[in-house]
Length: 240
Image 1 (cartoon, one colour):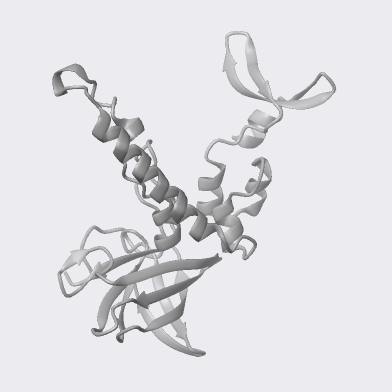
Image 2 (cartoon, one colour):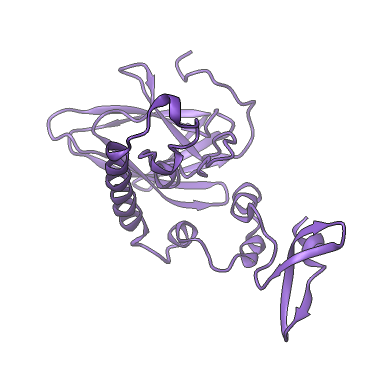
């Protein structure tokens, strides 16, 4: 679709411009940027890096995964914390009442900020306002509390997505107690973990998830070798 739309580009004022709309009179709304809605999503799902050439610049998240922007995780965290504070203040100052506001009037002051967390902890795409299903390389479960989500005191960072490999760092920030987390491949177990590598040792897994035990204060970097989209997606928890 990108190619078909951008094939209608034309030179305007000495500069190549691309259409973004079509109506009764044909193509219109020409801009210097190629037509590329959801280019990041297409790249993520297909791993076709040529799609990124349609964007004005490489997204910082992708640059981080490529090893080119090491400051992105910290910058994204600080930006989200600032947004939470700002929107929380706007929420507290709001004087509207339930009978005078539309259901979406509060969207611009919603303090929930999870896009960067989806990227950096799950290696996944933000679901955004369209509300499409979560696409991610890894997801976490707490086997002790029997719930979805990373266990208390455990931090995670997806450092690289390279073909069928995921480089993931897990940290137990609790200095006195061990923590156990289940790492699942994909939001719905749709990927298969072929093997996992840690400290130079590669161990076969052949399952959609694995269990990691972190000693007090421990950290570890795992390389997951995946077979992507090998399994039927499921909402079932790993222990079901």
